[in-house]
Length: 313
Image 1 (cartoon, rainbow, N blue to C red):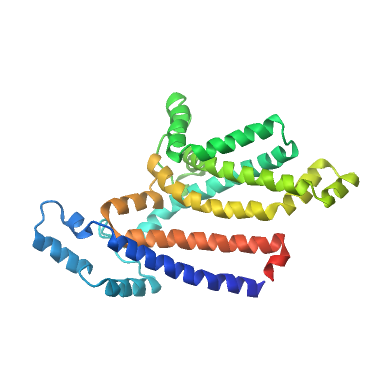
Image 2 (spheres, one colour):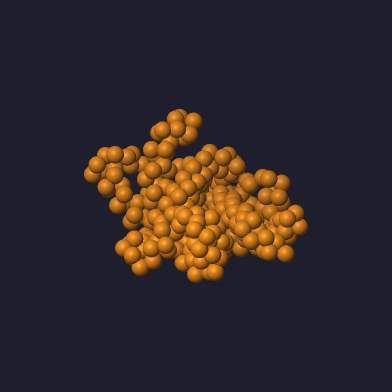
């Protein structure tokens, strides 16, 4: 197991290096000048040039990359051009809302999607199976912001059951924290539920045709035990895979959802930084998302080894 983890960790290093290079070049080569944004419309050419020199944007790309990568390796993510704070401070202030939203979404999606997929596979061809397949198609087809506005209208405007926008920190009360997370996490979970439920159904249907399932039933085991202990456990690898792949959808959906619900998280910070062409913030946020994605996929690989020990070798 230690050797397996070591190989996976080493494999993440070149991935993060490539991401860092691509992000740096992509931002520098796109049209627009952050110095002009900072200086304002009424600034002179000399003032813009002075800001560019102060920010180091007048140096060659290779020199800029060397300075930036050296700072990142030492934990210094730089200072925001627009917000006038260190990037580490900005991320620290915004990480709780995004982490809360992401975790709530994953919990809701897994708790709803996996049982739905198992039941739909068990009753293949029935009304629940057809409803689930229709929901899966609908979940993939409707954009996140449309789902968000629809839920806002139904549960916040029409019925006034839930708050429309904003975020309450966990330290200000668990109840208020949960209430403000219901709408955004449900919005983001719709696509995730459709993805996981569909894969769970397909995987369990495939496993239900195996000989050991018939043997378990022949022994007189209850159908619930057969489905959970034998079918679902042996179908876990593709289900865990799709959960890991869905993290990419989750990261993209966080940006949209936080904008719709006015949540001061990292997704909203990303939008503000892109509009202001704030290089240090954009680079740090993308690197953070990339690191989280790679780390979670590493955890998914570790989960594979528990469900199927052959994968370790």
